[in-house]
Length: 90
Image (cartoon, rainbow, N blue to C red; front, top):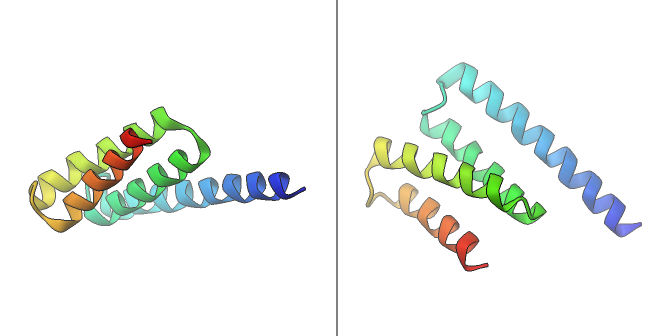
């Protein structure tokens, strides 16, 4: 029963992130830093679900966008670097 509830909640979380992402992309565009925050969160969810290819793609998207917006040494960019490193380490 616990696995069913957890799986159900993860599916619901993914739907909510996708809804938030679509809204941010429509309002701010796909490269806006607020949009990229949702991309990062969705990547973390994918990693938790074991969807490693999808997680890497989203982290890479977030990283490229943050590097372009803030530069490679900004703390927001480095947060994404850290998340991607954790994905690779696991």
